[in-house]
Image: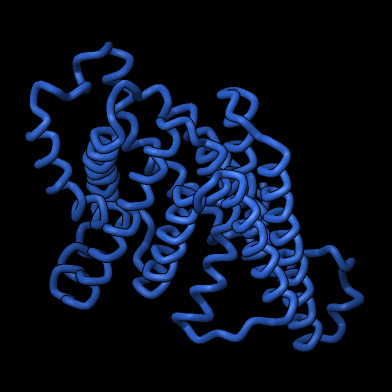
Length: 310
């Protein structure tokens, strides 16, 4: 199998796994969102520790501990991903899967806004149009919900900020997940100790206990698959694949969990999708133009729909 094709397989598998998260986290009830989050953190540390032990790759820990700036960045990343995980689990187990899907649909637009406000990047005209359409979509959904879709906005903001911090840290996926989970493990253990006999873990069924333990595996495996894809697939290809997860989540929310989708809410989602189409097409055209400027022969070497190389 060609390396790039294998990368697409890794990426698609990762996003399909993330797309099935609503079904998985529903199975963890009656445990509360914070208890689920605590176990997800702890078992992620255990699973990744075993993986790193097998690979005999522990030298990075000393590098992180000795570098205060890096340790501070990892701590911020851990807090952001903790907020993201907690918000997502709460959204799923409070029957708001559709709103969580919305959060991951608008995440690319939030990342663009962070690029403008934090990194002082300049947007092209069509990017501004996409952001504007996305803002109108949020306004429409706010009217439909009767309040801001805060779960969706918090998911998008926390993951967008997390992505920005991770970009600056440049830690490998497994090592980064281990350190971030380790930072969150102390408060997670304190919370579980405080729960004591009120915890659902170990008191529901054997299947429930196993699923709680496997939440660490469910967290780490898609991330490692995504890392394998990121090293093989063009960035534009990954950008298109990222919509697989929220599409699946939206489908589960409406078709499996029977969450309401009135006309106004559907209109809001339609505006989000229009914004994403504008954003994606503009990205494809921009990268095509950059490649043509660098190599004029490339304009005739491939069809207009071809993705740029890594």
